[in-house]
Image (cartoon, rainbow, N blue to C red; front, side):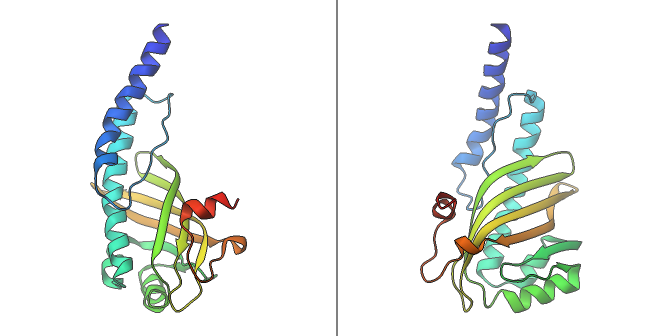
Length: 185
């Protein structure tokens, strides 16, 4: 009975910490999957890390939608790795990522991301997402995205971002939402 109370209290504490994330108007919110094996301190740290990472993700989405390569570049680490949707060749490092974004953003449409899972430790944050890119000048795409962020001081920067389109989910014409794309699996 005592263990059940502690587990319930831990879940309640996690929920209380997550309320600000759920209530925030942030467009790039990341859902946390409760972990009953975490202490209240670990849950608090995780919620704070996700809140800070969400700020970076909001800035990323705003810059992406505006085709703002300069704004995006501020969010990537110098040695980051990027694989854009529809581009099989990875870009690594500031110069290569900037070139990939300059050529890729104008032809890619709006991206819609839905978080499937997230994991965080002291220095790294892993976010697994479903994505749909609405058709720009290229055909749209859908699939999974893996995002690895690394803490730099009190901020999180993108260490790796890999979009993996799934041919069965490729979009032509009207774009599906990530939820609709997930339903097809």
